[in-house]
Length: 483
Ligand code: AMP
Ligand code: ZN
Image (cartoon, rainbow, N blue to C red; front, side):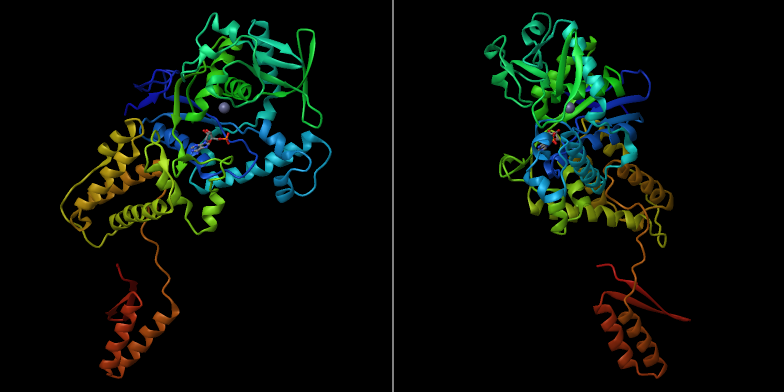
């Protein structure tokens, strides 16, 4: 089925067609900065990318090469792995006096936690083509910076390297993803921060001069020795080029990354390699708490750890996030998780009924087309779930034919390739508690002794404990009653 996606580059919903002209699709996701535990706003970001790549595979029948980088060198990882950092003291044990070693140890720790978190929320590692660490692509970054300078779009100043926006604006557009404030642009003003706002459009940093006590790498531009570390934006340009080749099909991230991160990525790759970055740019909206973006700096965040500690099932969190359209702001509440839990269970129970082979009717039913249509329509998960719920409400599984039950199981298996929150199997036998078995045994004895009042009383007690007992010629069967 043809997939339609909103493309931030063209500001419209477009038919998705792979660059390759084959079934192979290349997708790059801006990954986490591994300086702390991921909060569930970050998790929304990766669940969106996961949804997209799963829809491409299952609805579009594409082979997806999905790359998500790990930002293990930037302002924040350096700050929090430095000598005396609070978070280091809390989590990491001994520090050495080698900053390169410290930052590697620190970021590996949070990378592992991150992979754990996304695995808990149903993202499968086997779906990734590569999860590159920025520090393992330093020479590619240096090579790109050198090319940008040689092509006249970069210069060295006080040991750092900057992208010359005035040189770039003479020949190219800037602000293709996001309406930047070019009027405020002043030639020659430089910005060293990785993150800045639209009023601060200026020459941005490609490489930051070495600072005492910080990790560093050396290289040469023309005859000049440069020492220090990469800026954040150059990392993704170099990794995307090296691993996927440019232009690839889809680049994803949160709306906050449209500018400056993605805008700068586009400019760098065009200025250095002469290539466009991606055909489709797909951005998801924020997770908010009481009208504010969930973020570490505002302190209004929950990590997945926090929620699991409180006893929430990460599958309910996944389901909750997938039940809101990715392009809508999502408001996080605990009652939201509870409703998601109920809704997920309702679909799960329906799937269990489909596996019931004790009763068949004559009706046929299917719902795959509507659900896939909704997903192909710019990943409209709420609409897809609406179709599933109205189908469940209208369908009496006892009336379904055997073939129909089997084909519906197959349909739900495919939906689950995307949602990944259900069990596509018969309900596992519950283990019957010993006390219920004891009651059943006492009841058999009572019956043998023709003490029918006692046997009735025992049956009642068994039912009150939530079990059904049926007499058979060899004795009895016990099962959980459907409530
Ligand atoms: P970071 O680890 O800060 O580099 O962020 C990783 C991803 O999380 C980026 O794609 C951000 O856009 C995204 N992100 C950060 N905060 C939120 C939020 N509150 N809701 C949704 N996505 C977010
Ligand atoms: Zn990135």
